[in-house]
Each structure stands twice: as C-alpha cells, then as structure tokens.
Image (cartoon, rainbow, N blue to C red; front, side, top):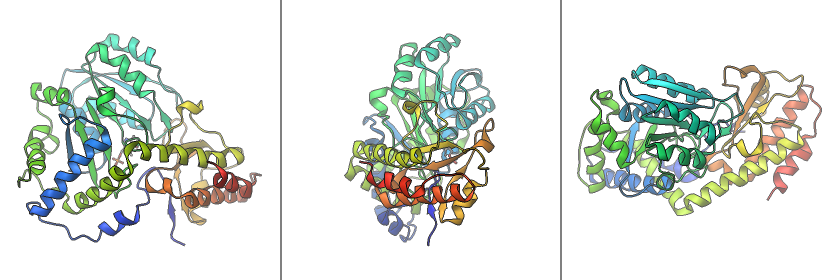
Length: 384
Ligand SMILES: *Cc1c(COP(=O)(O)O)cnc(C)c1O
C-alpha cells in the first residue's frame, strides 16, 4: 500500500493537483503562463482574505525563505522587534532577525503554552517597530490567540508579521480584518501543494516600511525587485527579475482555484472537523496533547505526548504500518512526544484519518501500551 503522508507538510495532494504535476514547465514569458500566474496572485488575496491593496509575492523556496523575505523587508539593522515565541519556528524567526542586525526582544512561553494578549501588551513597552508571531507553531501544535494579539498590537502602531505556514487555509486568519501587515506561508502545508513555493502577502504599510529601509534586504527576497514583476503578471505583461518556478506556479493556480471554489471559510471548517474527528480517536487511545488546553490546540496538527513505556521509535513503528508521522521537534521536549499532521486535502478524506488512528493504535499496542485500536478507529468514523 502507498504510504499515507500524515506529517505537518509535505502533505497528500488532491487528484487535480497531482494531475497538474504533469504540466510541462512553461517559459516565464509565455502568455498562458502570465495569465496563470496573474490568476494565482488574485486567488491568493482571496485565500489570505487580503484587500485589493495588498501585494502577494510568490518566489521559489521554502517557508523559511518566506520568513526571511517577510522579516528583512520590514525591519533593518538597529530596528527593534518583539518575537512572540511559542516554539521552534518562532525561535528561528528571532535568529533571522538577529542576523539582520535587528534588536530582538523575545516574549517566550513554555512548550504547550502561549503568551496572552495582556502579556503582549506589557512586552510592547520595548517599543518594537514590528511584532512577529507564529500563528500555529508546528513544533508544539499550539495556536496563539491571533485576533487577541492583533488587537493588542494595533494601538502601538507596530507592524504585525504572522508566520502562517502551518495555518493559512486551515485556521481563521483574515489578513485585512485582523490588520496583519505580512502574512506568509509555504506551498506544502494547508494549501496542499508540493513543496517549493514561498508565499508572502504584504499590506500597504509593509510596502511603505520597505520603502523606508536604509539597508536593503538581500536582492533575492527584496520586495522592490519583485514588485514590478508581480504587478506585470497581474496586468498580463511579461517581466523578469529571476526565473519563477513555472511548473509549480501552474500547480499553485490549480490548487488555489480548488480552494477558492470551495470557499476559504469552508476549507477552514473542513480542518476544524478533521481535527475533531482524529482527536476523538486520540482520546479513545488515551493520548494527551502537548497544548495545555483544548483552545490552544491547532486544527492543522496534533503534538501528542508519548504514553508511558512507548519510545521515540513510535513514528518508525507507524511507518511500518504504512502511515508516515513526525517525531518531536521542540528541543526542550523532543524525545517525549510525536506529531501528526491533519492539514490539506487529507482533511476531506475520513478514511485516511481513520486509517491513521488505527495504525497508531496498533503501533502503540505492539509497543506494549494497552489500548483499543478498533474502538479508536470507530470513534474517528462516527465523529460528526
Ligand atoms: C513548516 C514551517 C516553517 C518552515 O517551512 P519550510 O518550508 O520547512 O522552510 C515555518 N514556520 C512554520 C510555522 C512551519 O510550520
């Protein structure tokens, strides 16, 4: 049986997206490609729930490149940034900012916790130019209260940069409604596309911040270099700065068209239901999540403590049963937990969720942990 990919990215692809991988890469100046890229950029505004004055950027690269693009275009050497740290990826953002010469203040939470909006308000005393937050930290499965944090930051005038790599299309994060200045993601997470595209949507305030920088960002991620190219694509004109990943952009257009046809809110609802269903199975197995309360648990993945007597070889035992899950990532707790992604197309496949829980139960039982895999599987199937 083909292994089922249940890690927090890369993820399983829809049949239409898989079929689009057969498309031969076009010339970046071909009229049909320009049309496709333009449509993808317009659809990105819809998926990000961003206004017409917001600028989407799509460049070849991973989510980390999107983080670097976001950070280096809005702050420069000597600027101040507040990083709300909920795990591995927010720590990475702090490192990107330090390398940019930015003075970084970190508001950190223990693994499984998230700073409250009130704690964010207190930390704004450091008068940051920009606040950086990870909507869902993939190392802990914790989702912050993004609306609360956005409301806390707004009066300060600081820019708000949100790492939405593990949230966009799976969690509510309307960019314009929340006043997010930069919202970023990567293709291989809840957008359910192959890895390879870094996606950044910038507000007018973020573009103005780039214009004010005295030390420009690295050329390859510079908004100023990419802006005329992306505008040209939307206006149907050829333009060149660096070759876009033309094959992946064609796939992006197919995946976004599917999401837009479904509706963003419906896609988020699909992730809510999948999380509820798979967690009904985890509950029957007696597993506990790393997030300390249910309200902090993301829709898009679950970080679960290994039960007593079960070692970090559990993902290998699951792989033997045809289901690929992820080990721990957060350095403070790495050997004591594991992670299961439930994001992207697979959230529309109840069979895949049930198969995952069954394989997990079987693997736990084989590892000597008493549980009822059959009942756990049934709980996933009967969840609404
Ligand atoms: C996956 C992920 C990243 C990094 O993306 P890469 O494509 O691996 O570089 C960053 N932030 C979050 C929240 C992620 O889930």
